[in-house]
Image 1 (spheres, rainbow, N blue to C red):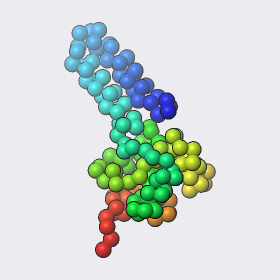
Image 2 (image 1 turned 90 degrees about the vertical axis):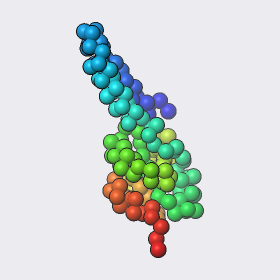
Image 3 (image 1 turned 135 degrees about the vertical axis):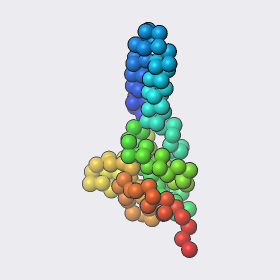
Image 4 (image 1 turned 90 degrees about the horizontal axis):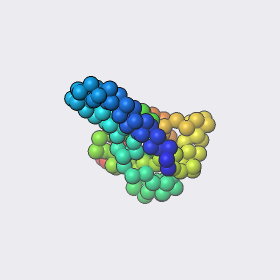
Length: 145
């Protein structure tokens, strides 16, 4: 889907434009620094930093089988990015669903959030939690016992 790449592409284009000025003035170091910053912003706001997305139905089926939470997210969401980064390696233990790729997922998020597509919405043991604290979510991943 093309719209998930709009924000990252805007960052790349803006970075190129901003870096052009110093480059034309012969300041290659500053131009490279500007371009690098904008490329990092593009990467962080792209779907590349997230584990592979699956459909809402498949995520719910897997969650019922293994008990792992389902995270509904969308590219460009700063709260989703924050959750993903703060979870670190634990993020791979979750089932990630991109609501821009799956209309059923978007509907599930709207149902859990009074008609709003508020993400991240995390479903743990059948209960939705909107924008949960990453530390709390990591606790949910630990085996009980």
